[in-house]
Length: 484
Image (cartoon, rainbow, N blue to C red; front, side, top):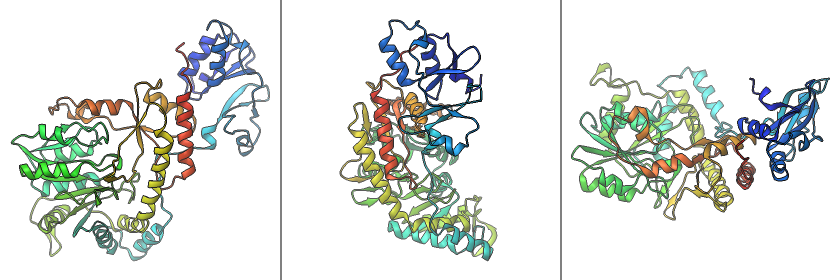
């Protein structure tokens, strides 16, 4: 059965069958057709709810409750003209052939679509990349690589910045350069993207999963303390969704036990903890410039450190274990983790607008926190007065009292043209990491099962954030359709 055929039902259908079809579909509408296939009525979610309230039984004929005054358009009408019939009140318009049979459907999502994340490339990106092409400096050598590193280091007030191919290689390279390897344990949060643990595994060490805090969703310092063993070599906190972890407590634990701190700042560029930028607390920190990050190079990453000797070894390992002073002489078996001049050119253009990006995200975050924070059953990620979020991806948790599951809310938002995604799945329950003993991480489990991430990007308008808030409020205010 095609997606569109799932939206049609015969005139003889019962209310139960209409409800069942609405619950199965993703469009939010059902078309009622007669024996000839001609459309004679329509049900939206709202029509169905009104019918349920007015009817005595779900076995009653749906024809008595269907909307017969529906708006439709002809399949011969130009598409641009068809879209004019859509608005915030009329969100589904059937397209009929010359015999009145439904052949397609227009939806509000076609008129207005909000992606989860979009990069903003309207600055000097094209100019700088064109310069790379015109000068033939397109690979890992070139002035933009050094410039990108220098500007990134200066922004953070850190002496050393090493640009690499992506955020995962940044983590891996930092771990290896710091001497983390076989027999070592690295404590990581369970609630994070898999790259955090993957880097530990590829370094030859064992990831030990710690739970996160109920309030801010970052790694729980007390659980970290409880996971320490004589094999623990490092703590790898993640500033999840742009909210900094409790770095003072984590650094204290590390200092007390002689451990390394490596910050995963893939999501937190520009975030601050007690006034200091994320990435400036540990021995080193790793950043990502994937297309969905605060600044992007398409793919790319950066390592920050104030340790000159460590930076020297990172640069050595980044380039096959060779030094610039003696090419093709390998001191170590290194990696090809270099970034290109073209990627760095994009990075330089992005750095020019970083402050604007962060200010825009701050405004988006304020709209979300105001619009969603007052909704019953919505729990925000706590930030706290001593922290500033980068608002990489605004995420919330649905309370148990909310009738909709996370996936149902995502489906309803998609009908409105709004993309969303689940928060990260806990690593300790995933097949790739089950061989590593984790114990229980109940907070990670709870947040993951009910957490949803909403559109947040540099390219997104403030009015679009307000629209998302209204959509979430509208969906949650509606009673769910009863199960057929």
